[in-house]
Length: 122
Image (cartoon, rainbow, N blue to C red):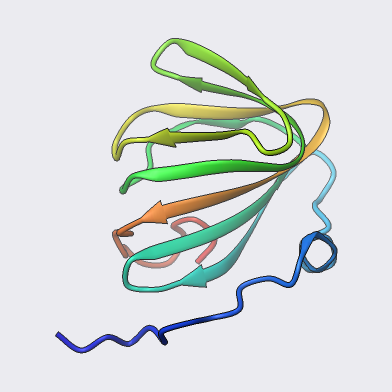
């Protein structure tokens, strides 16, 4: 199988670039796709409101870059600050809520299912 993804891709030079490319919007969840390859899709979100309960079509790893969030999954609540990370299997209901102000997160969709426009900021 031929690979369309280059062997290396610079995705971000740092937090300042991410702040500039996605400053967020008051009262909204502001998504930005940073990278989409054959084996991973990386989304950058600024949360100024709850990302209500939903399911991801593929396994995900969520990482907090700024702020604090409450991550709800299968009846458990996890408080996470900068550097906090959580893995969620495909199809599991979960929600993310910023705590004490806006939060900035990365979502790594592992072996992403490409379904078309409207999914995770396409």
